[in-house]
Image 1: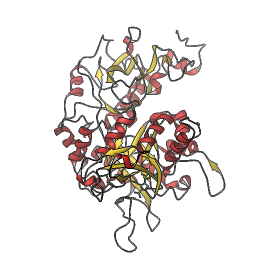
Image 2: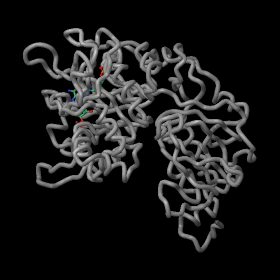
Image 3: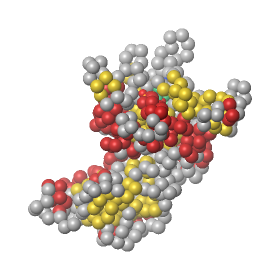
Image 4: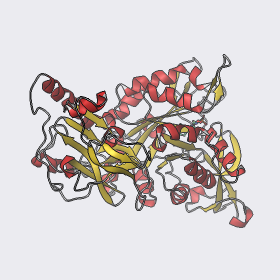
Length: 513
Ligand code: 1PR
C-alpha cells in the first residue's frame, strides 16, 4: 500500500513523511497490513504481512515475560552493533543468558521475504522466531515494551527521544540503523526467562495508614490478643526497592477490598501512580475488581474499575473472588460464556494478557480419590503436605474473601473455566503454604500447569532461593512469587537469581542496564 503524504489521514501522512516514530507492541502490529486479532480491520499497511496468533505448540500463550533479542543489524535505537550484539547474548554473572526485554502478547509478526528489509531484530518463542523490532528510516517499532523493560528499556526510550530531537533539528540519519540483513548475527535462539515476582499485600493498618503487610496462612495480624496489622513497609517505597533489586514484576494485592469498595480505596490508585513512576517493570494490581455500587449509589462495572487501575499505571489486573463466581456461573450455564464476567469484560477490551486470575486454594484431605468422586483429587508427594491423619490425597477448594470462605469449587475446574473465559494468566496461591517457607506446593502447581495453556505464576511458601529453582524444575510455571522473605529481607532477589543460574534455570540478570 503506497502511503500518500498528502491525501491520507494525519497518522499516515506522519509515517509517509518519515518523521520519527516509535511504536510499542500493538504499535508495531498496527504498521502491518492486517491481524488475525481483528479480522476485517485493515492495518496501516506500511509493512507487508499479517499478524498471527502464537499456536501454543511448545509454550504458553500469551508470551508474558523477559526474552532476548537476536539483532540482525546495527541499531542506535536498540543500542547494538555487531560487536555489542554479542554482549546481548553473553551470560552475565548470575548465569543469565544475555540481556532481556519484557514481552506480553498473544500475536506476532513472522519474517517474510516481503518484510525482511524492515527487520532489526527477532526473538524466539513457541518454536520459531518472530519480529521483535523493525525500522526503516525514522520509523521504528518494538514488539517488547521498553517502558517496562527496566533500565535497558528506559535507555532505549531515551535514545529515541534524543535522536528524534536531532532529526527534528534537521540532522539527517540520527536514528539511522545498519543496512538490511538476511538474518541474525548470532544464530543462538533466545530463551524466555522464568520470572521472579515480588508481591505486596496492601491494606490499611489500625491507624488508617496504607501499609504492606503479610499473612501467615492469610492472618496478617501479629500473634496474641489484639495483635496489630503487621507493617512491613510502604507500598511505593517497597516497589521501588524490589525494582532496583531486580524483581521482574511487582504485584499489589489490596487484601481488604472485598470489604471496602475498591475505587473508594483511592490510595491504591495513588500507589500505582507512584510505583509506575519509579519501577519500570510490569505492575499487577488485584483486590476488589468486580461490578459494584459505591457508597453514593453509583454503579461501576468491573471494566470501569480495571480501566481506572490501568490509567493509574497497572499493566495487569488480578481477579480473585469474582473469578470464582464467574467459574461457577460458567459451569451452571453448561460451560458457556455469558460475556458479562469481569474476566470477559476486561479481556475483550484490553486483551487476555492483561487479565490475571488469582486463586486462593486450600487443601481438603481425602484418604483416597474415591472419597471425593466429583472433585479433581491431587496426589501429594511431600510429607509436610500430607493430611493430619497422614492423608496422601487432597482436592484443592477455591476460597473467596481472602481465604475466609470455601466455595465448593475445585481449583482445577476453576482454572479451566477461567482460561475459557479469557484469562491470560493464573496466579496460584495456597492458603496452607502461605508464609510457611516450606517451598511452593509443586503438586498443586504442576497439576494446574497441566490443566491450562496460559502462563502460571507459583505463589505461597517460598523460604529459600532453592525453592524457586525447585518449582521451575518440577513444573512449567513461568513465574514464582514471594512476599514474606523479601519484605523481611531474609532472601535477596539477587540470591534467588544466582540460585536459578546455578540450577541452570533461564532467568533475567539483575543488572540489565
Ligand atoms: O478476591 O478479587 O478481592 O482479591 C483479593 C486478593 O487479595 C486475592 O488475590 C487474595 O489472594 C488476596 N488476599 C486477600 N486476603 C489476603 C490475606 O493474606 N489476608 N493475600 C490475601 C493472599 C497471597 C499472596 C502472598 C503469597 C506469598 N496472599 O499475596 O503474598 O502467598 O506469600 P509468602 O511468599 O510470604 O508465602 P479479590
